[in-house]
Image (cartoon, rainbow, N blue to C red):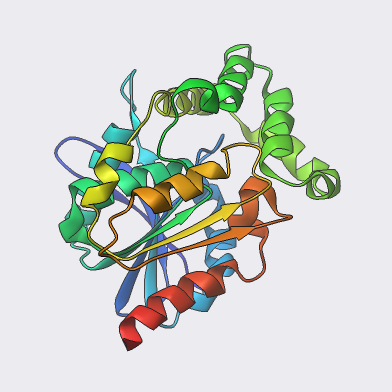
Length: 271
């Protein structure tokens, strides 16, 4: 499948993205926190989401280039919404995983005119208090420049134990690819999640919402998915499903995950 990589250029920022697929409908992915650019995994992402490629054109956005010293989730959302506008995308089916889900919730609440549906994976609407404990560990290791240790701490929290054992070489490879610039970006983007809370704004979301969480998530509490569901207005179509056995990375590992996304969007169109 052909993947096109490009950069959105606006008056205030530049943001890398990739796109693939040939459909008339728009599907946007905002990935979670990553040590290296998601653009390096563009072909893998395209393969993972090949199920959508006939009916959708899929866009995957990185965070902006030239990060400010302080860059909150709200800032990330404003920039991503700006990138969506700059590309002329409308009626967007927006999928955000982990921190990407936090960004997506802000966009849905504050820029509802952009969205057709909101799809959330392994995310949380309130990161205050001890919910940021794992995040703080990652930032501490990054500041100490203990990159390989960071990669394996990240992997142990995000993925099931057996998956980590089978893919040790891949995680070591990520550590080897990581530059000082990558580390600095990681710290800034990770710290932008601290004290994030959008629970009070969830009641303003107007579009249908699908929430996919994990009962065995070690990064974010499973109750976070349920809290989002309960905070959404009763008048919209909303659905929640909790996985078991895939941990935080259910969005990467659950074999029916992309089908669930597609089924939710298809059901809405057929109503």
